[in-house]
View 1 (cartoon, rainbow, N blue to C red):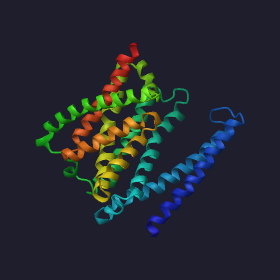
View 2 (view 1 turned 120 degrees about the vertical axis):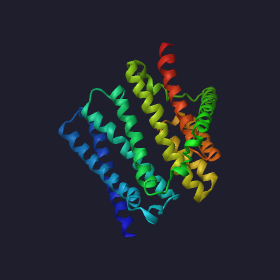
View 3 (view 1 turned 180 degrees about the vertical axis):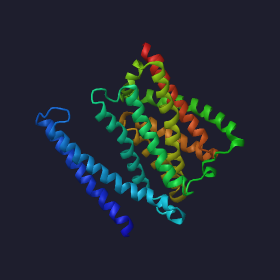
View 4 (view 1 turned 90 degrees about the vertical axis):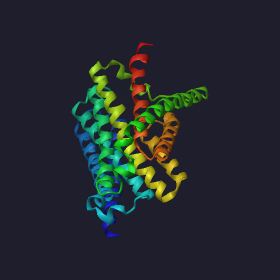
Length: 302
């Protein structure tokens, strides 16, 4: 009990401190404090950073320490809501470190640039892979066999993934059209409009990070870990529902959450049906890459 007590307390205290720093910043904005590293802003940011570091430290120990110990300890809590939520929160915190550092180092550039996009995309992808590897793959909780990565079946799984990718493109477009008819405006591509101004080499880098690395990382975490763990311990209803909902929520785009959640259902089905995570990785990559290409070449010339 003591082993997991102090990380929880540290995370709770850190959350309070971080909230205080955030509130302080909000009050400074309302009081007319100019943006930039003024003494007041720096102090508030320091409080916010200390709090966030405490939360990340507590969560990091709770989530990752059993994986580092290995053995039967690594199986502790696998499939529990507490570990799933703690792992997801840790990913969110870690994935924001890169953008925050970039914003502080390049205050005038913003994330809507090649380097900004790469920083944000790499932060999310690396965080997902890091947590999945250290906590689940390294200690053997999640194995290559569990993921269904078999060289002799790779060609077939790649083909299945390509077909599935074309199917999810149609599904996503249909859902978005229906939502549009109901007055729900999709904003996920609008948020990426500045990609149209990137040079070709910068766009290629964005497609690699967002269209290849992100699908691999997200499938490993949400299907390889979350879906599989829930399926073993809580059955298909919870496994499909909660893993897809968390997958949609991580994208932080409320108007687009229904299409993303539906894609999550399809990717879960593909993983369970084929016994391999490769088809869902490929389909996910096709969906993301085609969306980037349409945004860059088609929407940009409209």
